[in-house]
Length: 173
Image (cartoon, rainbow, N blue to C red):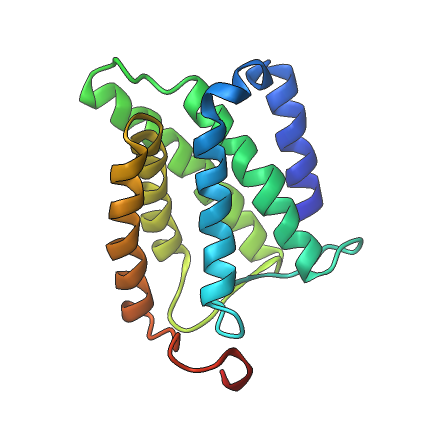
């Protein structure tokens, strides 16, 4: 399913011709990739959510598919049509649509056993995380430095809330 999502992302980016504007949104595509890499580094051996590999991939390949295809591709699709000049209501509805898309996909993945939650994480936390993530993607496109600055307390807060043992060497977690 993870590999299929990567392929579907590529197809949608191609069909919608979003790839034409990739240079405009590249920094934000890199921001989401860096975020996923950071999660995997900080939470090594203490994953709050774990992607169970597909039949053709292992854990590392699955994470690489999300880091370099699925997440940047969906960030591109999100940003290309984001109503930057729209009303707060319109922007909220647009973000809500993308939260719903991510939530439905994740629910399917959870029901199929492709995502396993641990240490108190659940679908509700994922939906809340997605809400923050999509707002941060829009913010990053307009004010990248502010997005990076705000990412620090958000990350620290999540690490604290879920008691991620970042002070313990990885091999002892």
